[in-house]
Structure formats: C-alpha cells, structure tokens
Image 1 (cartoon, rainbow, N blue to C red):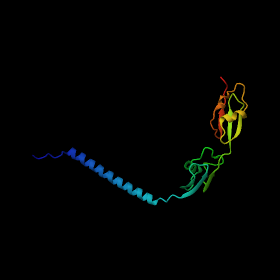
Image 2 (spheres, one colour):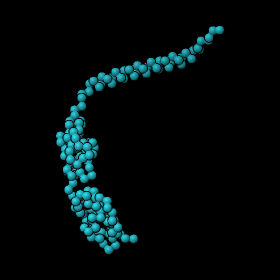
Image 3 (cartoon, rainbow, N blue to C red):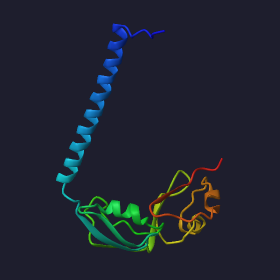
Image 4 (spheres, helix red, strand yellow):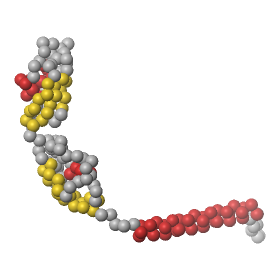
Length: 164
C-alpha cells in the first residue's frame, strides 16, 4: 500500500512553521552578534578603592565604581548602632577614606501629656529607666514608662501619657 501524500493546506502549515522557525533562529543570531559588538564598544567601568574604618560591622577596603555615594559605601560596611552619622552626607561622593566615629552622647526627646516636654543629652548606653530622675513628671503622668530597661537610641522620642 502506498501512503497518501499531504494535501495542500497541510503542506502550507508545515512550511509556514518551518519558515517561522528559521526566521527566529536568524533574528536570535543577529541579536547576539549585535550585543557582542555593543559590549566590545563599551569602555571599562572605572573603579575606586574606599577604606572604611570605625564603628562599622565590616571595616575594610571596598572597590566601587568611581563617583559612588557615601550611602552606597555605608550599605556595604553596615554601621553599628552607636555610629555617629550626623556629620556624614550620604548623598555626597565618597572620599578615599571614611572613618565612622562612635557617638559620645545621645539626644533624647521626652513628650506627652504626662510630662513637661524636654530634650536630654544622655551618655551612650543609657536606658529609659535612667531618665526618670531627669524629667519633670506631672501629677497625672504615667511613670510606668520609666520601668523599661530598653537602651536608648539617638534622636529617640519617649512618649509619656496620662494615668488611667
């Protein structure tokens, strides 16, 4: 028995898909060739070495692209909790050497209905419970806030409400 040949519409569909496949292969090859040429034309990225020391978890020398910002360097070096970043502009171009000093004093704000608002300078490592002797608590003020042994952070705001 002889096998019947494909009819015209079946040949058309098969040839269409073959032509589509060949076109896709050609487009892919041309695109990869253009990408290689574009990569060869690109100039190498200039890098700088930045030394980071002080109150950071990862001190050392970092190699970043030229013109990197201080914020990018800090992301890699990871400043510690009591690192003094107040004098550092994170949007400025990073210098060759960056030393992060340790905070000496913390600025803490005490606010709320139960206390006279004030701003305190306390040593690093102070706790909320250490503030009770330094503030003026009103009659209706809730002093239970000052039982906490939590360490204070720089620029922290302590809210003292009224007693219930």
